[in-house]
Amino acid sequence: MKRKILPLALMLLTGTVIFAQKDATNTIDSTTINPNKKVEKTASANSAKANLKTFGNNFIDAFLNKRRVKRDTSTTDPFSQFDLTWMNGNDRRHSSLLDSKYITGIFMCDVNYTASLAHPIDNTVVGSTALGRNDEVEVTLCALGAELHADNVRGKLLLQLGMNSTVVPRNDGSVLRGQYNLANVYRYVSEAYGGYHFNAMHGINLDAGIFMSYVGLFSFYAAENWAEQPSYTSDNTPWFFNGVRLQLFPTSNLKEEIWIINGWQSYAKFNNMPGIGSQTSWSPNERLHFISNNYVGTDVQDQPNCYRFHTDNSVLYRYYNKVSNRGLSKAAFSVTADLGFQKGGPDGGFGLLSSLPQSNFLSCMAYHRMWFDHDHFAWTFGGGYMHNPGRYLVLAPTGQADPNTNPATGTTIGQFPYNMNPGTPFDAWDCSTTVDWMPNDFITFRVEFVHRQAQEDYFAGHGGVTSPDGYNGTALTPGWTPDLVKSENRFIVAMLVRL
Image (cartoon, rainbow, N blue to C red; front, side, top):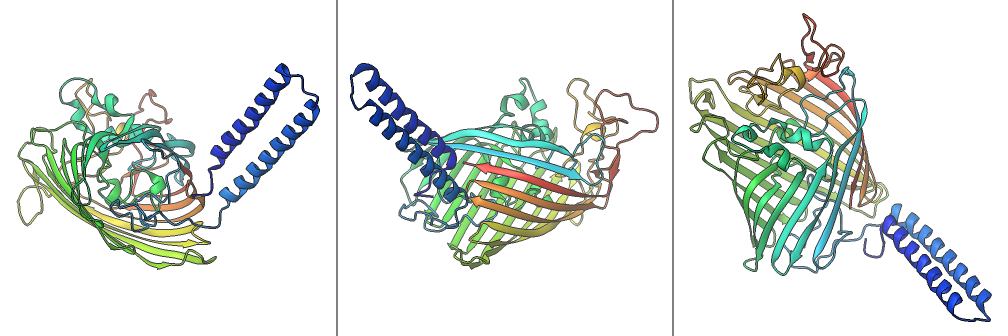
């Protein structure tokens, strides 16, 4: 918003002006004999009132803005000739509020209240990286950081607090290899990298550190997504990579990206081979976008000859766009399909290729979104399906059903570990409907309903997964087991802020 200032900034600026005027007046009054002292005080008070009135008018105008400012297309940066703020998994802001010559500040906050209709007694959400707790106000993510850019040197640091700092890395078994607690070292870092921009083609970026993967289309940051709870295709694929990436822009609407990383959403390496991947992102025009992510690596502990292959492909199409309309102002859809497998060691990949237990991943998801009232309201509906006969990418349940290793004992964390063995099937589908209110580019109020269904017992039932009374430390009584069920229905109410 070029001529609009964020209400908070206006508040600070107006307050500064008012107090500055008062300080200046008081200084003159205390050091100079001024016969017009009363007149100056009256003028200062009137000026302060006028500034306060202007602030109030600008606040209302900015918060309830009914006009969209077009993205600046004067720059030659790749993709800048297009307005891609409509895309699922993409930044929807038309301008960066905290931008300056050398630094662009970042603040994000995702606060939600989510409730499974089963109301688990331990309030734990099972099978999601977007949510962690039921029936409570939850800070899923609070991130603060900045992008740095001086000459051709670039860097980014984004610190994360909240539920995501625990939920997302909990299945990373690579941190058990060797010494030093990598889970704690990196837990509160969402993105951290340094890099250099080369003035060749339409730009070349070389970055090293932790960066987002975007395999599965949905973004790690819910403020960029059309829905709060991603489908299985996205939720069971990685959110971050730790390593080196090379971004090539052969044309202004094409990006080729190469990754050399420690592994598939892992802070460290499971074996000696690094993970290798790529992304192709292409917009032939503003309405159409294609994304293809591909990966190969060895991500099975103690199995250096077990290779993982994965391909993730999406198409997004905006087929209607009239932002000036009070009614329907925009409409678009996204379709994503994934195929992957692990082969070698105990895993047989696809059944036709090996007599070993199957370990493959077939999934798809599709979402349709319509915007209304100059893009201030939106309605999204969609869902997806996953077929995984080896459970090799399934998010493991928590609590007493947790199959992950306890490093202190060398045994599973849960006393009733969920079966993650190759050849054990997992088939599931989900659907959701989401309504968003977006008064401006920087805040979203969201209401969502989600239904998820699995062929096997997987989601948290009313008994929860922790103990008979839902609390850690409570003794497990004979006959008690984690209450896992085949389906769940949940409501989500969220407020998403991005500055």
